[in-house]
Length: 348
Image 1: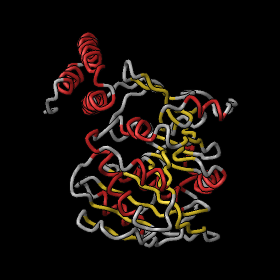
Image 2 (image 1 turned 45 degrees about the horizontal axis):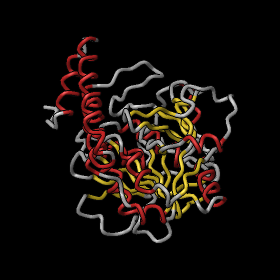
Image 3 (image 1 turned 30 degrees about the vertical axis):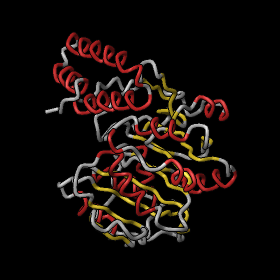
């Protein structure tokens, strides 16, 4: 079942990729396959947020060459067909074993609990930053795949722009690979707490101005976000109170004025767009799941109290309008989730 690469990839000790898995091992395996079949292989850290569904065992099986990485869309069958040099040197760590640097090419962390996007990524960042050679830290959603030259593109872009503190990439829709989900990141309105992807839905054949995209980027999308060591040491880890959503804009505001934001235009990243959390999608016309609705509103209120306390009443009123809209649309579960998050109550 395993197969060796036709020519060995370059192992790069200066880049670490961190991905969070929660009950979506097959997505994670497809992501890992795309990373390990590229021309440059970074350190890769998977933080499993207490999936308890055999995820860790499945990922280990793949690393040993005992499980096939499947594609969820025919377009990506070429990606999972790319050769990987199995077995991969990997280890599994527990939450009690995060005081030593990352050592293996693949590290799987059993975090011991559902720590959310921020907490899971932070556990990976903690062991990555202990390795003195790593100077680029790439947060990559587990429901993404990357092109074979993408890690090299990231490295080359940061080498060419030493003043960058963080950067994003173009993100294409996994199930509609001819269209972008967004370019680099999002623009954000503090008045509504809403964000919109830059050039969302546009054709990959359509030309764009990279400088204009960068100028429009209020924050880099967390599905593909690269930070330098200087940025990470200055700004710090993700804010774990958010659990899901608003971590990226919080991070951007914390580093604003001190670190430049860049855009790795040559990277190729495909995203299944909200596969894990059930996020809303204007492009697919999918409504938020109650879980996603709850955490979005909850994080929005935490964000407002932290950065724009005078706008909390406005956010509160907007949330009540959202509750009414969900009721009108006959979405009682979403209405209940929004209301409970607004008033600081648990989802259940």
